[in-house]
Image (cartoon, rainbow, N blue to C red):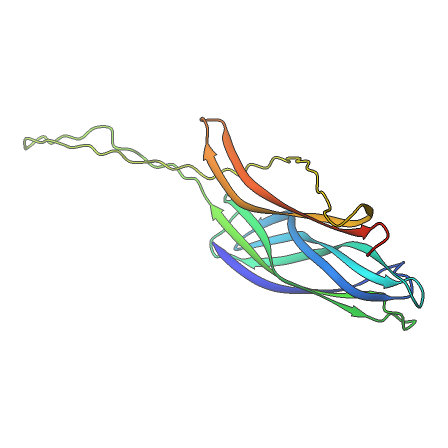
Length: 219
């Protein structure tokens, strides 16, 4: 098992943004592994950092509007892991440690560029299955002998289960009627897993849903 931290920097220019980006209201970055390859002593990992930002921009001298930016940044790392070979089963994960967005100017001098700096941690765990002989008989030709037994737990490799789930809910505004919804997001909290049977598992959790919009006749 090994971990490695790395930093990726990327400039993302938006084609709209009115007269320029004013303020970043919210941003989120999620990293995913898209592929990996094992060679002697190394694991080559490829992935993506999915960037999303909600920001305000000038429409004219007096008015502002909100827009959403989404972009994908490619990730690539070579992870050193002594002893790993193609016979190992590897579990690879990329976690975002920090993600910073700043507003920069493009070549025309307009504030339409996001400077993105993402610090990630790549973790690789390697397992290898091998065959071992188990004692089936024991005796002595010279002495009386006896034996005792003990149960040995044979653990198998962990299995990764991936299954998309869709949840729908309604968010009500207590401040008035929503005229426009600029963005919505949800955070998963208090996740627990419990085995139901040999082939089933119950996953429970809470979704904290938030949205940002414009109230009719208001802000």
